Amino acid sequence: MTQHEQQARVLVEAYLGGRRVPETMQTLIERAVAARLLAGLEPALDAILQGDLDAFAEATAGRDGDGIATASPGSHEGDSGPATSTEVHWSTLE
Image 1 (tube, one colour):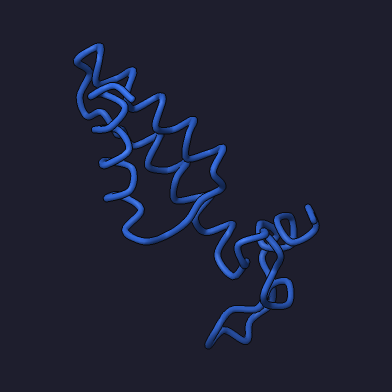
Image 2: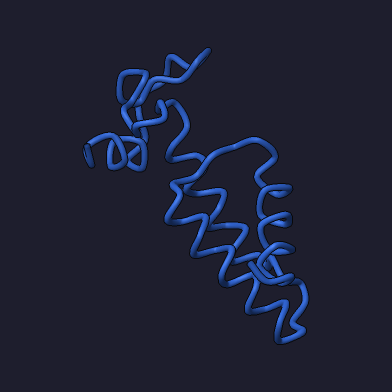
């Protein structure tokens, strides 16, 4: 692993702050961040990449290590409201 790849991993993991995303998505974003670091572009973890991480981290919330939903579709702790279309979409991919 190159220095840029290591720096990219640290940046992505720090941004996630313990949240998880699918391994493939994290790898792709780390590669994009490494390429931005190598090219000298700043910020290396730009708003678009942050948005992608946020979207996938939220979409995988409530799933165990195998990607299996651990709660019924649309349910959240402390939330008794109806599911949004995004929640329904992600819950039906399995």
